[in-house]
Amino acid sequence: MKIRDIKCAGLRGATPEGGWSNELKADDCVHTLIAVHTEEGSIGLGSVFTNDALVKASIEVLRPLFAGESALEPERVTEKLHQNMFWLGRGGSITHTISGIDIALWDLFGQATGQPISRLLGGRYRERVRPYASLLMEEPVALAEKLSAVKAQGFRAFKIGWGPFGRRNAKTDEAIVAAARQAIGPECQLMVDAGGSDAHWPGQYKWALNTAKMLANYDVTWFEEALTPDSLDDFIKLREHSPVPISGGEVLTRRQAFMPWLEKRAFDIIQPDVTKVGGISEERRIAWMAEDYGVKFIPHGWNTAVGLAADLQLAAAISQTDYVEYLTGSPFIDDITVGGWKLDADGMLSIPQKPGLGIQLDPDQVVKYSGCRDLLRS
Image (cartoon, rainbow, N blue to C red):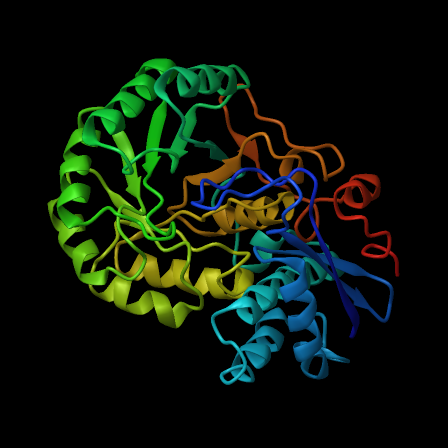
């Protein structure tokens, strides 16, 4: 089974707010779907956390390398793409695009063998996993109302992030967290994401440590992106002294970038994003390394239904992974797959058992949000 073509389609019209300094608008494109087409007519699905113009350009750069390649050897093919990109954008949009290609190749591998990707990754440790509802922070009253509504949908774990947190004063920070804890109750898990990868993030080590101590009073499960993504030494100190677990890593790409963070014990929880880091192949290697260093792997998942499906397969295959991120209220997750996603009575998500990613895109919804009618056409 050989690769005949790779197509992409940017998602627009319902792009969720990202919490960024220069806020996303509904028609901005930050998520792009990938479809790898084979000579036999099979199609594998991928997703890229990058604007479609960058993905299209990256595909053209990569085309001489993937044209005619095997569609059933995801790790070898994607490593070939990585190895030939040292001079042309390694770690940036090209690496993000390779991530989507890799996911799609694993999807094809699963389809060809009749197995879910998780079984091809070595086996399934679990058949369901807890999704945490991921929401942007707002003023306390508005946030509490939104959390109550999401809890009513069946979620039992929640992550709040960005917004005014860490950008105003300590009193505001605590008021937000207190309102969130009261809204969800003591029985639910609460995670806090400062959003330290925002442009010109102001929070420094002492702020992060003082904030971590405050978060401990509200039984916060982890404190995410408390510092800027390059603050390795400060993250090391913060993890040593924080009373709550420290997490991060969503902006890093390729396993080599994660090595110093794992070796120096900068995180309690590592959070690579499968749609940026290099795909399933790369994320599995990072997860294995994390286990060797006693660091928990929980995937970052602020992306699409295809990204969520990949995260679920990884969560099944990695022994200690007990959460996946679920971006609530996004049609790019809720609407573009046939059948959608459903929580069970315990607030858990079943991990698809069908071949590959185990999902099917709704062609009409893909056209609605991308304007592209050719993505899924052989």
